[in-house]
Length: 287
Image 1 (cartoon, rainbow, N blue to C red):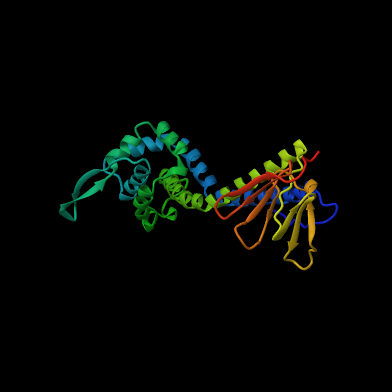
Image 2: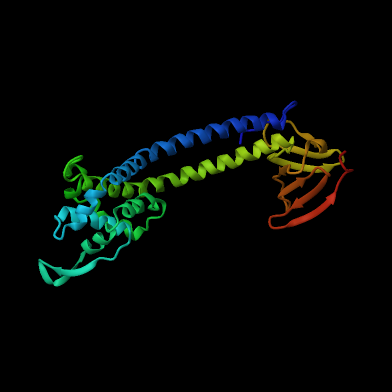
């Protein structure tokens, strides 16, 4: 909030107007930053899906291949990992005693209906990819044989290019989303403050939130006698009429009292470190 000095003629609506401008600028600035980060991944993902919608025939042809090239198998295996498809276990050609994951059968199942398959890619919940899925995908996205430059765009391997584009940028979206969490939180906080300010202005509320750091000397009939720590702020009596419902005087007084709260009905509550010590009416109700 804006630093709100004491003085004649200072009114809440002026302070809140300054706060509203600050919060609005903050919301706009955060919105630009969020949009900038998303623009690096979302358009590529959407473009890949749109292009795949035009390649249904190529997807059918890919499914029909019984012994596909390793690169095609790897691209579709990455898709299956995203979709949490379980691989078949087959003997490792380099060591028959071991088993390796084989995703081609699940891949062909995915491609059985190309239109439905592309729809699953479009509707994939990018905001909730599991960490376990991300760990499995590392070997695919870091494989130099699966770099997008290895595929021919608008050529025979265009369908693999589009599929791998979806894989690469959906994977990247996970990390962009993590970067956006604090930005979204900051924007939501600013929006909440801005909404409160607008509501107060609309209702004509003149709530005054005050924190005065000093020492409460005594509670008097006209208000509270305060001795300030700052040399540029002379001691004064804070009148009851200047203290509204949520006004607070934070005190630095030896002993058990740590805070004094006053409300519009001129009730005073004295607080200790852990609990309310006293609550009573110290002066007539304010008209």
